[in-house]
Length: 200
Image 1: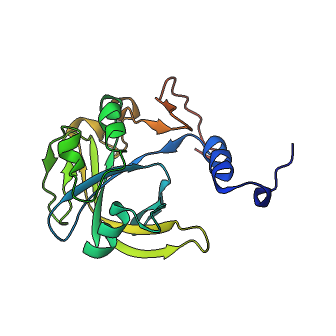
Image 2 (image 1 turned 90 degrees about the vertical axis):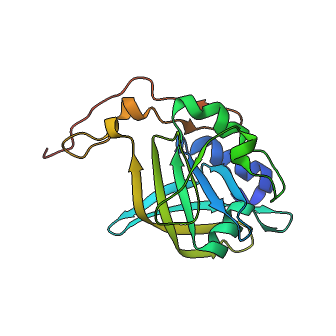
């Protein structure tokens, strides 16, 4: 089967890419607006792009012809927090994917405790095993598509004490992250496979 993306409508292209680029990490992005209202939403179009300096990115689709609250807040305030979703937070994360008006605080909606960040204005999810405080660096809009890609530099990482070993590695079993698939499907780690890189 050969598929020309230009022959598909937007929804079909979304299904194709979302279904084959899997599993994807989930960036559970928390922000705050100029009035102090917190926002929390999951983004699976999310990734790390640099370690020096430490930079992550997320891509946000449009809403009603404009920016979604997360992207609007990250650009207006210049900061956001990436919270990592562990398996025990799956239901709460899913609850925050609701399409809600800007004045709705998704922390309260999902019955989650918000913890203050130290270097940015946006709060973090208190129960998240990892939270990355980020300052917005750059952004650009994908031409003709409506997505806005936002890059943030990590200025402080909150990592649960039991997750980082003496060599600086994160314990994957302890982190137990949730991965996004397609539709309503998610994945948990399951069996871990270790493969040494050539030369190691």
